Amino acid sequence: MREDAATDNQFRIDPDHVYAGGVSAGAICAAHAAVMDAGDDINEVIQGFIDDNGGFAGNTSDNYEYSSSIQGYINLSGGLSTATWMDADDPPFVSIHDDGDGVVPYDADFATYFGIPLAPLEGSLVLQMRADELGIPNRLRTIEGSIGHVSYLLTPEGFNESVAFTSEFIHDLLCGFVVATEEVPEALRGATLYPNPTTDVLQVKAAATLRWQLGIYDWSGRLVREATPGVALSVQGIPAATYHVRIFDLDTQTAIWQKVLVQ
Image (cartoon, rainbow, N blue to C red; front, side, top):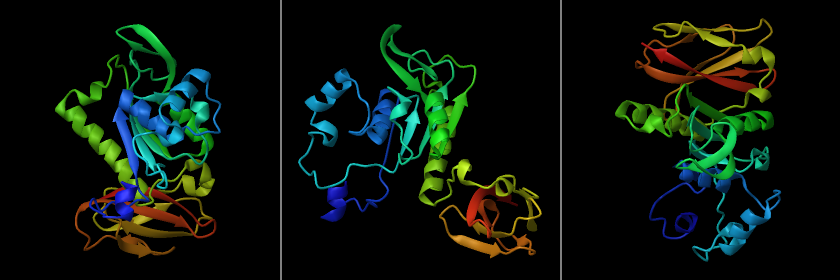
C-alpha cells in the first residue's frame, strides 16, 4: 500500500494512517504485527517462526524500502503471547472481548482449539491494563457474562454495535480525539459539559482554577464553533447531531474531548 502511494497511487491512501485489525486469530496477528520488534524478549520457538518467514520484514514482497509500521489496530477477541512486549511508543488499539471466552482468553490463560490447549496467551483485559500503564490510548468493550467466542458478531444488532464501537475509535484517532488519561491534569480530567443534550448553550463544570477554551467539531473533524472562558458555547444554528467538543486548558496546554448531542 505504501509503495502504491509513493508510485502509481492507485488506491489513494494516506501512508501515514495505515491500520490493521482482525477477529480471533486475525486479531492475534494484528496485535503481534503492531507491537513485536527485534528488541523484545522473544522465545526460541516464536523467533524460529519469524526467521523462517523472512524476519520482521516478511517474505511476501521485496519492497523493503517501505515501512510496514501501523498507526493503530483493531483487536476483536485477540491477544498477545505476552503484553510485556508492548512499549510506550506502540500504536493505540481498540478491543472487544467476551469475558468468559473459552477459545481466546479474555485475561491470561491458554488459547484452545476444541478444548485442546494450544499456547499461552494474554487477552484483551491484560492488553488494556498494560496499555494504561504505558499511557497508550485504547478502548475495551467487554461482553459481560458471556462464555461465547466473538458472540458480539453473531447477530445483526451485535455486529452493528461492534462496527460502531471500533470505527468510532479509529475516527477519533484520525481526528486527534484520543488522549491518554495519564497525561491530563486532575482539574481538567474532572471537567464536564452541561446540559447534554443541549438546544441552546454549553457550559463547563470544572475546578475554579481551570481556564478553558471550547471547540465543537463535527464527525469530519471540522471546527464548527469555539468559545473562550467566561463565554458559553452557543449551539444555536448548528444542525442537530452528535459532536465532539474539545475542552482545552490554557494553563497546561492539554485537552480532553467529550461527546455532546445537539438537539
